[in-house]
Length: 146
Image (cartoon, rainbow, N blue to C red; front, side):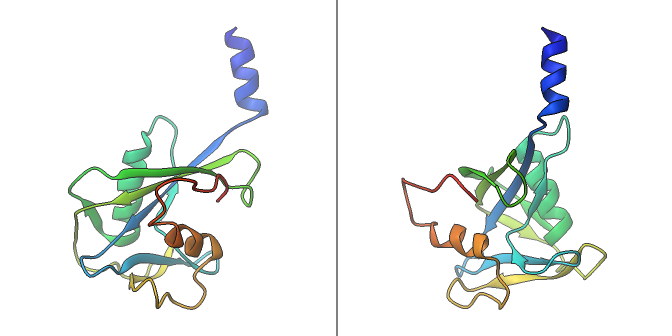
């Protein structure tokens, strides 16, 4: 049985990512623009082996925005991200109270970051990011695909 499990892990690997919706008290949403891909995104990234998803989210928020969550995030949905691969899934979290240290300075990964009003998102905000933000007030019937 272990051999069969190992075969499936190697032949059909599943990838998992996390994204967080961090909202300022005035309703603005935190977005990042990476150096290696076009567009503005919700902060997040890949879950490492042996890393819980919430830990990955907290790590990514710290790395990308110098943001520390002070309460547990709430899982909003699990999405299949067919744009990345047929086996890539994204966990989307809504983040509550947080602390942000000094704003993140541009580096090799993050070109820019900031808080933006939902009705004045920066040019280049990705379609998937816009869809997720438009669904914030939806209580059921969320789509399954990123």
